[in-house]
Length: 410
Ligand SMILES: C[S@@+](CC[C@H](N)C(=O)[O-])C[C@H]1O[C@@H](n2cnc3c(N)ncnc32)[C@H](O)[C@@H]1O
Image (cartoon, rainbow, N blue to C red; front, side):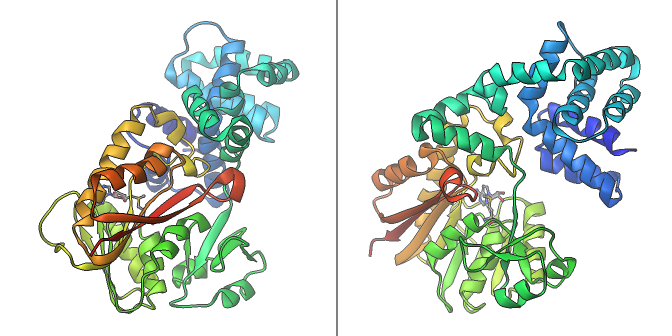
């Protein structure tokens, strides 16, 4: 199967609404392994189409009135993405799309040829379209961000979400120093944001194979720094998989003490265990456990520090999770805070008196961040709020993140 066929199949699978794009990509590449260049083309087109979905559908709307079946729409989205967003030779973008068009070959051919002829006019139409179309974001997200952050920050945020994400790694201090990693790759640059973060063009395969680094945005380190676990302590990482934060907590503890790292899903706990092993963490025990549930294996009043890196809307990481924007609804900003509060209510009982709990998200939404802190203060009197920290893409030029620190009253 060529990468364009894989892309159309992946887009059709995504349209069913059951899986997120990264899961679909993973499954597709497992079933149909590709050479590096084909793989890069598949990833660029699949994620690129999803990132630009409303721009591409606007163009389809300008070029064709009436219903289009899902298969033809997927082929057109892919063809138009190549014409408007890539440097693919125009004849290749058209011919390869026509080859995928099945019974709608004629229609695909006519629409894409017209798109080539009228490209300049269509680009002007796009410039005059609504910001939801221009920036390819749902209207309701733009409206809520404009209310919270203002129009200019929202404009920068939407642009940021559509840029390919930088690659950052954290040097695994249990195996290597930042300086050693920087000296071992010509493309590696220290990050101005965090002393352990390194920006790379390409990650040397040995860094991964030898467990010298963990691929993560510097924003993900903020909550662990705020928790500041000490060597010898007992720490709970309540929502731990795939382990970016667990492995950093172990690093901060010099791999001395004890970490219990929980996650809800077996498959994710398996990935967590792989990462612990790869990075040489010996103090963490990964278990499948629902941290909403009371009772064993987690004892009350037993942890010095707890990290609750809660499931959230992910609006701070849309640059990386390109399709999240199309899956969110207003209802999520009611459902998720309720779940986050329930997790905190439960995990607060596991903290030793005087112990520290950090709640974190990669969301930008007040309901999941500052407003949730207010709810915690009102609903969980044993927790005293100490401070919060955040990263905002349009200010800090890294992913969005929020972390709030609480101490359990003695
Ligand atoms: C934001 S992700 C965690 C990312 C992780 N901390 C890291 O840095 O790699 C949230 C995780 O919480 C898990 N989760 C959701 N509900 C849970 C629950 N009730 N108990 C334990 N884990 C849960 C999800 O499966 C998901 O892996």
